[in-house]
Length: 275
Image 1 (cartoon, rainbow, N blue to C red):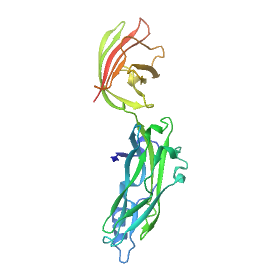
Image 2: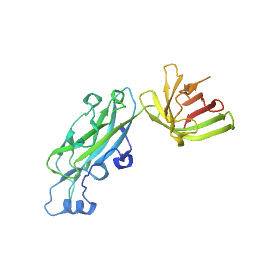
Image 3: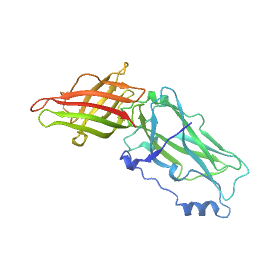
Image 4: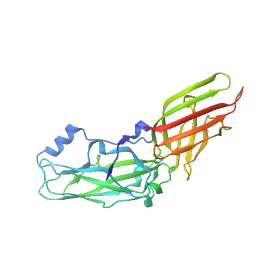
């Protein structure tokens, strides 16, 4: 089962949701109060707004999203059942679309916290190869009910913006040479990050000109040759020459390309190897 690192929406400017939270002391005071009822919640950092990064896979992947927590002065001697449901209303005003139902399954919307337990994971099976990478999808979830406990009204919901990474995404080391027709050659030696465009295409900095907004997309073809597409501020007259391939064994791109300019062509030879 996969567990993924989640980051707040604010870090990626994807979504702004105001969600209350129970301060630790206040939460402890509530559950420890005399005669207090047991409380179920998506406790602490599990609730609120998240970005969920999942890998591009052709088969469903079971993913533990969060744990449903039971808060009470002492562990209970009977089971508590919480119901979790998809809640599209949480996406109102966010600009995110509801994740299509055919791209995931929920094995059970009923979470049973057995007597003596405090936390039970909630699992979703994602079919990431069915997700349109050009869309901004999210999966909004809410604890709608609980038997034997009350639901914490401000720790019951979470929204996951879905980010699918293809198998090529990640950090790479680029080495090579940029040859200018007037100024001569200069070395390329820098870290590059490949970000997902679709299942076979990623985008990264063009040569060593990323600081000027020059980018390129690298599409890996069925025979592992690579098609380079200039994007961003990159020269649209860029052409490939010589060897342009991807080696899946070493996870290395070998690229040869050039673009025209005053005085002649600027020629780039580089290898980009995954770290």
